Length: 462
Ligand code: GLU
Image (cartoon, rainbow, N blue to C red; front, side, top):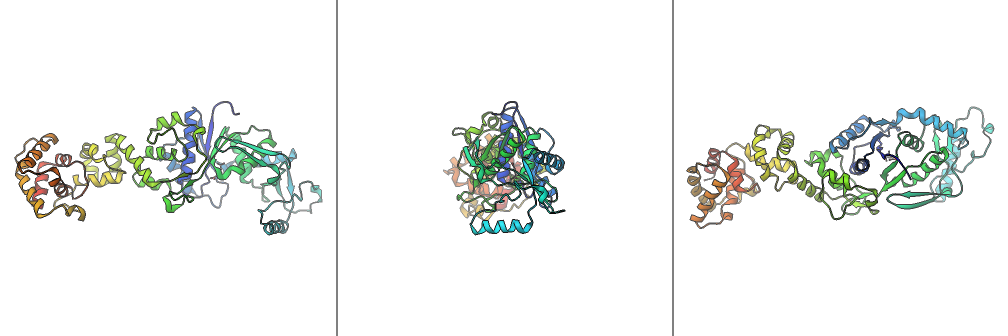
């Protein structure tokens, strides 16, 4: 058991965008550290210099900043620790926990052939494990291999998967230093996690067997093994491994879709973790409630519709003024009417699932006459309804108090006089004033526009 303060880390390889799975891993590490008042660290695993790109690093940093996943130290760039990784490899060599392997590429290829013929993955056959290194031909290149224990087993007491046992004879002697002297991933991860004081490794379950190999290395070094929590995959809504087709995009794409970071945190948390029946919660609640014991063992399914629903809830909880600022940042054409947008926000956000819908619905505030009317909205403008708008026009013209309550009273009185129901005029009124078939309540719409503008837009349709 780990004692002392919790330290977690997110350790992405910067070879692509920060996708949903990575964002969830980051969130779980962050929430766990915050829950325990510990530290959350970021390590960029950029040892594969050919595949790591600055653009991917930026995408990871931007995505985490947008998601509000703040770290407690500057990011660690793994490739900068290479000297330290080599030092530890030398230490393992010196203690006999590693050895030099002088196999030629041809010999390795023949092991691969044998494995392939048996339908098994390549396993090193141990040629140099016990051979005297002085037998090596002069000047022949070598790799350094970890001398993995042959007997017994590794038990991973995984916080999510439970007890997982892997027999040591299933794990061969992996390379820790390549022939060019560079360290390999498996060694670097262990050394960095140890040096960063990581107490809990929370990551995708594709790393579960790596954990067994890593535990062997921890043991050889006499280092304390951290706790592991391997998260089940995220599947698409059809139960197949999540891909672009299911909406698995970079985190930036979700920002561009007009989602709020708190909604994203809420939804991502529910991809594998639960707290009773709670579906909608704040980030403070997430931090208070989060624990590894409530992470499920079966894969979660990503569902864009649900994400948008969660976003709608958070939009309605979000401060109106802050929302107006966000909407204007997305739709700069609305910036001149930001105040009006803020006034309209309680009505606008009522049905919106994302910030773009708010912008679209708020667009009527800046439309200029004659306003564009969508095909769908135009259907409600018939000779009959245009006649009703014509009858309503003078009633509004003589109304002096241009406030929502007074407007509503006047329109209802008009309906009463003509023996009409609200539904007999609202769609046409909405079309004439907003050009849309959905909008905030019609009384809000009238009140949010200037009287002259309302009368003008009505005139245009009469
Ligand atoms: N860099 C690895 C990856 O992106 C993660 C390694 C780890 O979390 O231990 O899959």
